[in-house]
Structure formats: C-alpha cells, structure tokens
Length: 96
Image 1 (cartoon, one colour):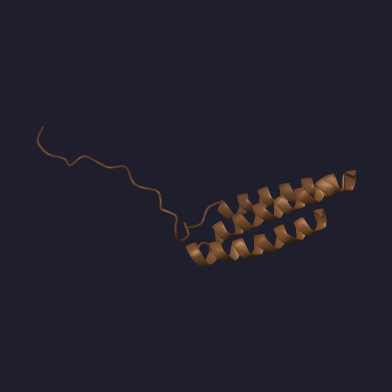
Image 2: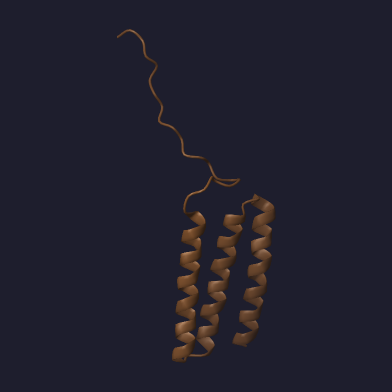
C-alpha cells in the first residue's frame, strides 16, 4: 500500500513540476515544486519502513533539497514570474 502511494506521489511530482514549468515559465519554481513533492514521497516511504537506514536516507533527501534550493536561489537575475527588486521612490525636488 505504502509503495503504491510513494510511486503515485513520485509520478505526481513529475507532472506537477512540468505543469508549473509550462504554466509559469519559471524553472526555479518548477524545481521547487518537484523537490517538495519528492521529499513528501521520501517521507511516505519512511512511514512504511522504519529502520535507521531509511531515516538517514530521508534526512539526506531533506538536506539535499534544502541545499539545492539555496544554491538555485542564490544570486542571478529573477526568472519569469518574479518581480525585480523595486527602487525606493524619491520625492521630486522643488522649492521648499
């Protein structure tokens, strides 16, 4: 039962990532959705098998997801669907 749920979640992760990529055009957001759902699949797998090896694998997946997301969001120009940082408004100079 758990194995089928993990397989379905993994397949859904791929489809959802593709849908986000096609819908927004932002590969960063698509990657985030994919990584989040793959993390969910890993945690579901952990619910079925409760050994220390499986726990270490789930922790490694979560750590890898966080490191990959941090690397993807560090620097670089914003992708489609993201607003660039706004400049502070300045008051027009005039008499006064």
